[in-house]
Amino acid sequence: MSEKPTNFIRTKISDQIRQGQIDQVVTRFPPEPNGYLHVGHAKSICLNFGLAAEFGGRCNLRFDDTNPDKESQEYIDAIEEDVRWLGFEWSELCHTADYFEKLFDWALHLIRNGDAYVDEQSAEEMRKNRGTLKEAGVDSPYRERSAGENEALFLKMRDGEMSEGAAVLRAKISMSAPNMNLRDPALYRIRHTKHPRTGDRWCIYPTYDYAHGQSDAIEGVTHSLCTLEFEDHRPLYEWLLKKLPLPSRPKQTEFSRLELEGTVTSKRKLNTLVQGGYVSGWDDPRMPTIAGMRRRGFSPEGIRLFCERIGVTRKPNTIELQILEGSIRDDLESRAHKAMAVMDPLKVVVTNWDRGPLPIKVPWHPKRPELGSRTVFFGQKLYIDRSDFELYPPDGFFRLVPGGSVRLKYGFIVDFEDAVLDEKGGVKEVHVRYDPDTRSGQDQSGRRVKGTIHWVHAESAQEVDVRLYDRMFTVPDPGNYEDPSSVINPMSLTLGTAQVEPALGCLMPEIFFQFERVGFFKQDPASGQGRLIYNRSVTLKDAWIKKS
Image 1 (cartoon, one colour):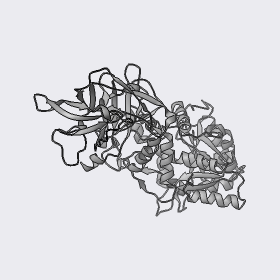
Image 2 (cartoon, one colour):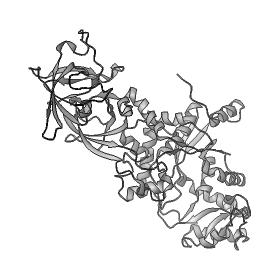
Image 3 (cartoon, one colour):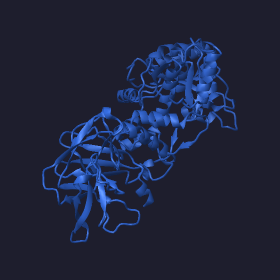
Image 4 (cartoon, helix red, strand yellow):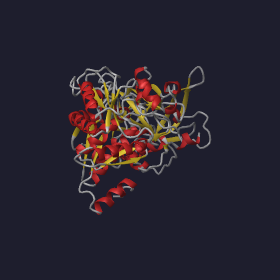
């Protein structure tokens, strides 16, 4: 078994353990339940849960539920499902809301020590007085209130005696700090909104910057792993840790976030696509959400392989979509059941077949006998893919051609006999003769042909719906567009049908399939006994398509 590629965080933890600085690694994955998780979150999930497991530690799933205006139980349930589907189980299920009482007490501690004050400036005034990167900010006129005045006002905020926007609690640091995040940042704001977990208990809610580090400390987190946009917030994180009587002292470490080519990962912009009806929902298979990737037919193992391949660094970069698709393809190659499906059927008549269908038992995967087998049928009327026959073939085309021969996989070698054309000169059907001495697995004829193609028996085939997915956007950087719906690829979803072998005509929602020579597919959850839907997960590498 090959070793996992190292990264600076893994190396740091190894050194800390070796030097006796930590006894147990404790991490956390802290999503805000204001939308569905996306591929960027998958990287963080794999990192946090993976490091905890590797070093025999713990990883909590913590909902950063400090903004009740945007949060819902739907998102909470979806996040839990996504983490489990990716193959991870949390040590503790936590909610920042469960710490509201303790966070409030610590806010009082800051006020009483002169490290926080209630500011009654308007949001516009605070924004104006904050200053710029080149100019210092202006102190609030309320900054020098006494601790007693601030505490009384903060209690009024808590008790619902002040309206939204009337006041905020701010840390008292420095309005001339070079780091804008240290210019008296807000710690609490008023929201007269019912919380999904605490109901009407609170009408003031802590900001993320205030709640984050303290929640880490409550849970005994040793490694608070954040993406690089939080690097400038670390001084505030550490300032609060020093000012408060906390049970532990976590350390924040930043790594580069996952930027995937051709993808939008802003929850706000993804929500716009959902609400605008540009996609069928958060789990639309074109969406970069974990739910969408699951529905499309990506495997959790393939996503974990992708996260391992891209690694963990501090250098921002954009990952090519081919790396994700290649990881899914590489994982499914050994995992998927192989089967035959004809996407664009061309009728083939075997003129010298004069009996009923011949059952042929074939394995689901030639290298994985434990997956079992299924039965296909060979008979007089077959379907092949229209692209596998050329009336006027170009050089290098080794499929069925006039005067040529080809092997039907698992079946026989067939020899071209005739082509029937329609009134427009198109090929309506092809007539062939099969060579009875060339049955696959029993062939002792010595015949060799260059091409092998897939097929299905026309009379036993099942017609299914297929959904072919392509890149969702027409540009490589859709996240830079304020309205990504303006660059949606109109061909990102193609609806069609396919003729599939009979074994694929029943509900098998958990099975990954490789339609041989076509691509990887998985049944859509909307499938029913009356009609099956197969989603294409990723395409196959095809030498002829590349050459064309």
